[in-house]
Image (tube, rainbow, N blue to C red; front, side, top):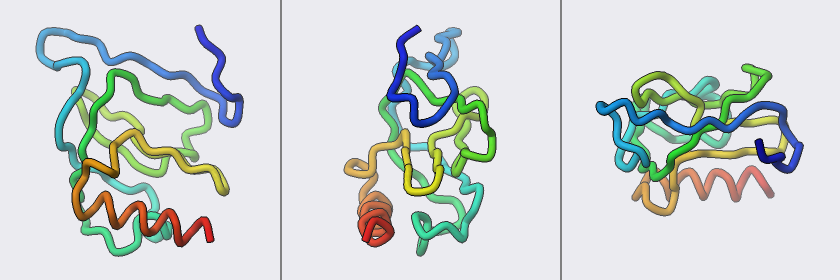
Length: 111
């Protein structure tokens, strides 16, 4: 019930600890890109793995904003993009070479 910055409409949902999933979610997960042609994902393999450390995930009202999906018990959106707004749930700084590639792509896209 906390208001965010208001840039994008939606919710932030806590993962449910149902005895099968650990919360916080920590570890490597595969990320699937909604638009592999997006410059942020340039040079990435088809099934990249990124490192996650989180207990919550975004659930945007506008499903078109989802730029990436991951499964942790059920699918969620670890990537959202709207114009020049980009947010990712994974930790690029912990995601080794692919994380560095993402940060490079982000810097190049930002100009």
